[in-house]
Length: 243
Image (cartoon, rainbow, N blue to C red; front, top):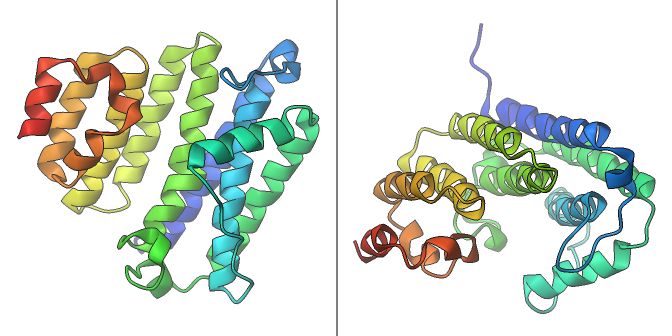
């Protein structure tokens, strides 16, 4: 049996991410599905509207690569965009958001199937990938970013162990995409962010030590990454970022 290509494994991950969102929504109590959120505390449907928006941005970029128009540029800081998206969708029925998200995922998979393998590996053609291969951007938004928000909802539902198991499962699957130390470090770093955000400081610090040894370029970003704010005063964190 031939080894699955990176595109095949990426497709499988995107499909799994979509299914994880479905499973999350189906398991939510009715009151959680119908809840209205606040700009500083999102309801489950707000998280999904946010995921749909950023997945659609990725889809627009893929369509542009395949010959479509360039996506409209976003103005301002990404936090301003996130707040605008929240306001625009706060009163939208959850059923519409779920339907939109399903369509975006289906279109993402269709676009992925049309992309040549060499395009997925290209590091130079697309300025928005910042020198990374295109496939890494496709892992981040419709997979890692989406699962991050699934886990936020699970944590809000007092299911932190379920959230942790899901994060660790996806980290293992994402790590399998590329043995390069830079990628392994990136995956480990993202896992550290989850632990830091959910009151698991020592586990986060252990992950960061591994991440920095595999990908030292992450150290500079860690100095400003808000996901790691809970660790900033910890002596071990200070020692890690000072090298």
